[in-house]
Length: 408
Image 1 (cartoon, rainbow, N blue to C red):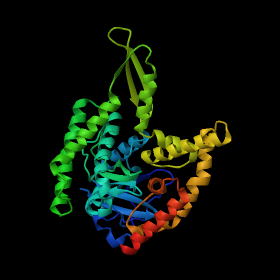
Image 2: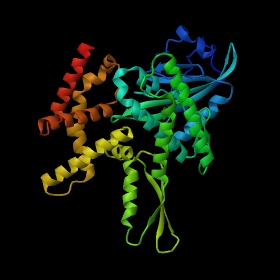
Image 3: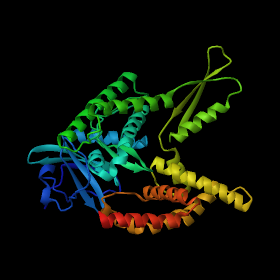
Image 4: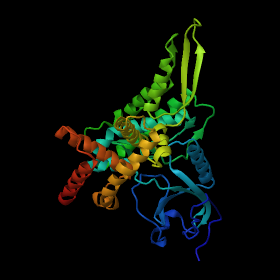
């Protein structure tokens, strides 16, 4: 009988993990643990294994005694703030042949890409520039929430496709610290310095293994992320002076922030120097504005950029239906019509590709595939100088993918 860990905690609805090889260090599980699976992942300074329970993959990371619960609690805090990070499932304290160890349990991030895959796979070259934007965006979100990462690196980040771009997710919170009510500028700058140093190390390792493209500058990549961070930070946190009669600028500013995906928490307005003007400062919360809107209307869970594209299509459909019916169509009605008559039929047509996507070496979520269909539809319509429709776009897309599979 497999010995149980000394102590284990898991959130409700999760496996109890009691059948794992707790007596052994993670580095020795190997063939001893039939639940182990191999999935794309980054490098880690600690032993990490992945196990499969009923089709759901979990990551287990072995840490020094007492550290796993701290990281678990930090990840739970990030989840409460709705920040992009892996989901904490539990933690365990186990007695192994090498002494006591603490084990962090997280849910594996489906459809995730480690940075090495973005550089090693030629079909993913187009995403490399988006990687820098995604890293900058992740750090901005963390710092706005008062989180000091302390070890930002490419290795500690996973990426998901997001409507042709990327969304970055924190996967290692071992060094993260929470500062309330806000993170001081000195800590923000220190976090950026750590990021730059770590990115140089990550890319140097890639170069040593011959996997780094020659046109990519190791020394300039971290600085580019910092510059993108600075531009986004200044856009989000800048104050404006509003003149009398210019209150419409408040809604313009809110719409601009929503366009970047940020939800607005508070609008602060204080008298400027002369008393006649107002100083405007808008505080944001999470970067899930369109994501929340799409979820509430359709039940679809998508990344933020994906959700923005899908919401744009729903708004266009709303205008079309309003014009056809000669009366205003509620957004909820348009969303239901879109879901039943457009989105679901497209996904059903794509079912063969979704179910066999491992053949291509690609890992697309249904919303991401749908966004690719929208892009393909636009391309075909431009060439034909008319709207070719979703059905024709899917058929042509599948023919294209089928040709690539046959020649690949």
